[in-house]
Image (tube, rainbow, N blue to C red):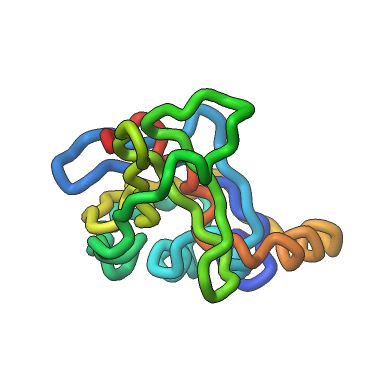
Length: 171
């Protein structure tokens, strides 16, 4: 009897992720593994996988609102150069974390470097993008207690599985 993807199942998948123009953003070389139900995936993708069994395939298109959101132009702003660490070269594409005025941690990507300031973008690199997933379920089994505990501990990182999908994207 096949186990279906659902709460507390350990799922192994292979996937291709393409933007709305068909450009390949990420493809698994090694299968991706996660415990379903702990915010490892984008919520719409997680929902699409629910009930699937080994060998099934899903093609899913996510609009920006269901993926990484729409672009917020207020998320692009200037920061004085002297606010950046001096222990490494400042380069376009570098990512930094800083505490926002309200105490939340902001991740920002350098998009332009000027003489006195640096333009940064706090939008996710895939914000505003339509995303197309092609996912094959390779295996589904009951997660162990240790796997569930680990998934609970990491559940604050929404969309972590696809975090690498931003490598190589133009700024």
